Length: 177
Image: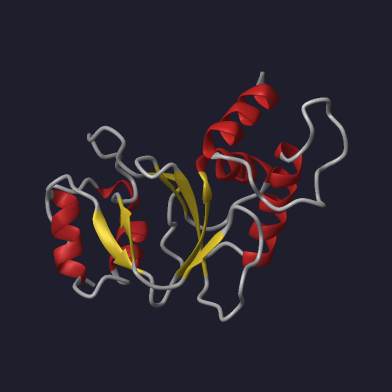
């Protein structure tokens, strides 16, 4: 195991080491976190289900999350960490990320940067990931909730996803209101 830089408090050592292990250079990842910045975690041995922040936060409340969930505040998205899959997702408002990287804060510590990514559910260090089908069901249920007529009619299922981000946020505020 790599020694933790002294600047990183040991709040979630197991989560730190587990997540840094996905980086091509775990020591550099830990050093980046120690200096107060987020690190790019490659999505080669991990995948993520990405949804809008409003939809994702509500889906987290519907689930009993057992794996990491990231809120990418600057992008307005939530990412549920899942095992890599060859599955395709054809669900409104959902993207399956299987390559590239996600900018992640250190588990156990919030970044002091405005609009920085933050953990809704931190990695626990033992490798548990969200079940992709469970995540997709929760997201679909929340989407159906938002895709109703203003009068509260049954979910709109006969027309394609055409709600703009502003309309989606407004629908979320009405539902929470």
